Amino acid sequence: MFPDLTRDDVFRLETRRLWLRWPRLADAQAVVRLAGEKAVADMTARIPHPYSPDQAERFIFQARRSNADGESLQLAITPKGKPNSLIGMVGIGPDPDTGKPNLGYWLGTPHWGQGYGTEAARALIDAFFAYGEGDEITACARVINPSSRRVLEKCGFAYQGAGLSELPARCGLYPVDHFRLDRRTWESLKTWSHTGFIPEPASVEVEMDRSLSLAS
Image 1 (cartoon, one colour):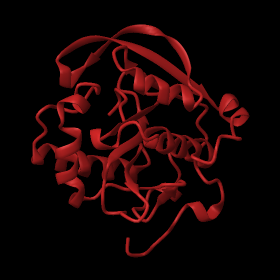
Image 2: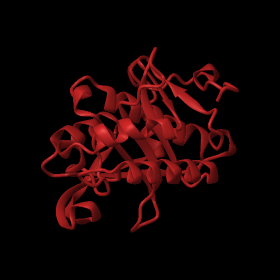
Image 3: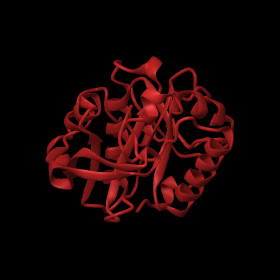
């Protein structure tokens, strides 16, 4: 799904306010504290509440392995000037049901309402289409999560309808809204505002020191 460029943990993306980088084991404590909060976990399909340190470490190991295999790209959202301070995650990986590339993201509650989710999602979407050969990305959000829906709409996703979806961490079927973004639409939206991905080669830093969607 992703090319060799993204399969090394030196890979990162730059936006106006953020660095998006591979998750590290040192992020586990922040993942437990932020993703494990009930308000965050309840809006996702796979984040449990409470979230144990062992579960967070397994998630990070799995994310890094999938990144290295090119099966997905899961990136830690960090503010510029604080690259070691994880505030959320954003990723694109195969949907468990359809196998299609699926966008997921979450942000810790202290960082809600500041546009970070949209900024991070746009950057990863741009990287997916710019560096890969995929033709579409899917996403979904719980119907009780209008904030996630707004993020997807700001990123150019089109509403595909509602339905019931299994949320494993929630132990049941729940109503969700389904969305889709194709390459042609993305190409028509490449004039996104300055909060999006910086499409110059310098936006991908290679250093030798090495909010809330259901897919999360």
